[in-house]
Structure formats: C-alpha cells, structure tokens
View 1 (cartoon, rainbow, N blue to C red):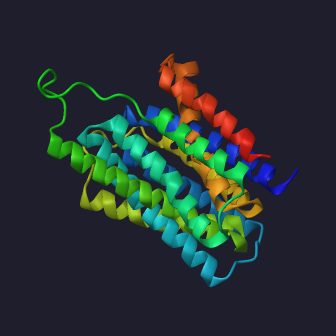
View 2: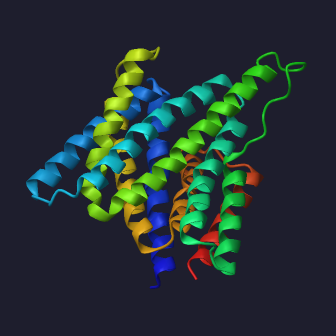
Length: 290
C-alpha cells in the first residue's frame, strides 16, 4: 500500500473511532453535562496511558515532542469548551458546519504552506472532502424570530458563529500540533496531551461549573474517552504515513460515522444532504487513496 493509501486507511480508522466517541458522548450528554462526560473520559484515558507507558517502559521522547503534544491537548480541550458554548447559543447546524470545515481547512492550509501544493488528483480529493464535511455537518436552521420565537437573535447567531469558528481553528491547530509531536512516540505524546487536556478541563469546570446532575456520566465518559484516545492514536499514525492535509481531512469526516450510528442505533435518520455528503466523502477517500 502506498503512503497516501495508508494515510487514508488510518484516517478512516481514526474517523470511525472519533465518530463512535462522539456518539457515546452524545448519549451521555443527554443525562449529564457534556463537559463532565468529556472530563471523565480524559481522566480515565490518562490513567490507562500512564499505566501502559510506565508498565511497558517505553522510552520517553524528547521535550520538544512532549511540549507540542501538551499544547495541543490543552488548547484542544479549551476549543471543545468553546464549541459546546457556541452550540448552546443556537444556530447549531451552521455553527457545527463552520467548525467542522475549519477543523479540516486549517491543517490543509498549513500543509500547503510547508509541504507545497498537492498533486492534481490529491487536490481534487481534498476539495471533495471539504465539500463532504460541509454537507454532513450542516443542517438547515429553524425559521427566523418572526415565526419562531425560540430562534436566536442575529447578534446571538453571529456570536455563536464566531465561537464556532474559533473552536474550529483550535481543533485544526490541535491536529497540526499532534502531527509535529507524533515523531517521538505516539503513546507518550498522547499521555502528555491528555494530562494537559485534563488540566484545561479542570480550569473550565472550576470557572464555569455546569448545571445539571453531577452523576451518571462515568460509564459513557470512559467509553467515549477510550474511543477518542484510540482515534487520536490512529491519527498520529496516519499523519506519519502521508501528507498532513490528507490525514487531517479524512479524520475530519468523523461526523458521518456519528450520524450512521445514530441512524442504526437510535433510528435518527440522516437528511438527504447528509447522505449526499457521506457518499461524497467515500469518493474523496477513494481519490485520496490513489
């Protein structure tokens, strides 16, 4: 298998894990505050990673790799808190679509700047992938305040989109930092990222304690955290095999997996737009694998 095919295949594995994590986390967030679900998953996965790295006596990578991974874990967790805040403000469909698009676009632009322009076929695949992410994540919003009093005001919608864009830039930056940190050992890099992520979430929880019951979130948090960690490790490997833009874009297709799981398990069927986006995503992966 060529490097592009390996990157695309590992990227799909990462997308499947991340999509499963979001699905399980979403189930948990229906019963408890989402940040508590995420925090419990981060804590559990951090303890498991520490046990594996210490128990297996893996060599500790250089300070450079650990620092980049820690920065990525810290700012990625803050971006997650910002994203949840943006979704809570309204305009969820457009906010999620903008965030998802920027999550993929930021690493693509970074890769083009540092690795040069991709080949024509790869460029077509990247464009198809970005379009697929928009179709999958964007859902039509409710009608305006004239017919729907619960619809967010224009100012609130603008603030939501701004925070969603900020979160997308944060997620995309995290993918870049993980790519830089992945050369020294993925498990130790992931451990460093998780430790910093736990610290960031602790700060958020202390500064803005979530409303709702502080119970009933550990099980879903642990499963979601485990899947998220596996997805991150697949991403580390995907980014090693090929260009960053290919790995990051394929991994960013994870919302399609979440939608498929919701359809199969909860019978929450996707829209025609989302089905078209998932079909386009498969075509994009096929093109990027060549």
